[in-house]
Length: 238
Image 1 (cartoon, one colour):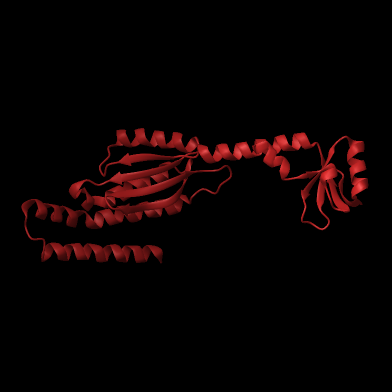
Image 2 (cartoon, one colour):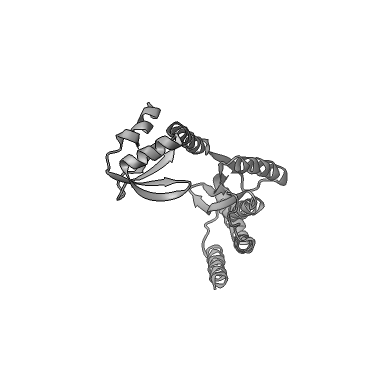
């Protein structure tokens, strides 16, 4: 069925209706009466194939039509294989993943990207661990940095519910690498955010455990940490 549809896409030889055509071959192109173009194709033992019927005059090529159909079919098959082959592989972390587990998952991510698959890495925050989301952001930025040779960042770490996601796509040959300086800056920003909030988060967690109302000094400290973070981000952008 697919081959029949391919045949119907092109007029060949006597099926061509135009009075004159532009003939394209390895020797160049020329406008000829249809009869003369057909004679030329016959002399070269090839076919006259109309490839641009809406052009004025229509454009035709002198080619082996059977070989042309085979190449077109092969190209479509390759494109379909590339589309179906692409998968999104998931890598899951905890906010306090140890180095052994980290490098084990880093190895798998390198394999996924090398095989042409995308990678969706995420940190899952369980219970009160959401208070330490900056640790997850630092981990994901480190992950992106360690995979710089294999993948490009499609989406920087972003919190969605109890998960923080990072999306990576495989690098194509000749693609421009993500600036190492930019990745380092993003990592430093995340580390600074973690440092500025670490004390406040621990205090808030202790307050929850002890069921102490978190007001007054604790909220003031949290606000100060937030103001410091905003100032850091503003200075970095400048």
